[in-house]
Image (tube, rainbow, N blue to C red; front, top):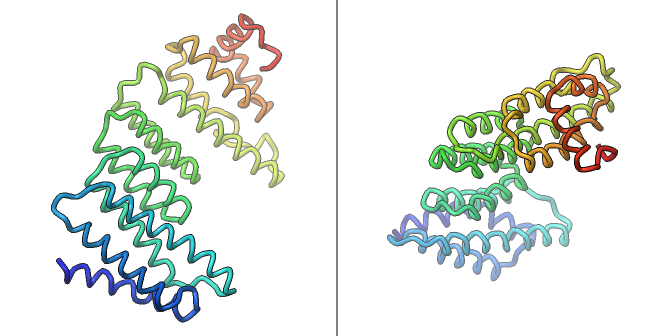
Length: 272
């Protein structure tokens, strides 16, 4: 047990040497970092593992990371490759923790860390594993899909939504609503890009024309409740503002007709 911990601590030598050589941390501070890591790594090897130990280890490493980044700026040095051993250690702690625990807060914290540090492929892999372990967890599938959308992996986001639809009981149509929201936001992003690039509207693809978003709607529009309709109307409002070409298509679409009826009844048509 002690030997395995020592091997882990030795893997941090290049990182700590880099700090010392650039005067990011002094010898006493580096000693304290080593002892803190030794303390936590020994806890990781206990037979009865606690999520609080993993979370405390992560917080300790994040504190070092935050101080390191400030010191790098203060001493006027640059980030070097060995510095990222710290980020990889935090990633390792998260992964070890998620093999043992299923807390939603842990997953969300892990995802935020991955997005902020560029560990996107690791994030996608773990999210897929977690979703497959909890195939009926609708909210987890939606969370995974939306996070993939946030990092512009629309194809994987769609895969998560499609799997969720086939595996989850979704009487509230939440999966479809969020699927539609993601497609509309993606459409808006592409439209903005096309405009910035000077691409003519007649050259827009299926996404920019709104056909993909409409296809999602057509799958469940006949089942929506008044509450669903209210939420969809807000999304569709942005939908129309994003691309004037969609008006002709939407006027022929049953969703548009149903939405207008809802808006008329609630006297907010002008806002639409």
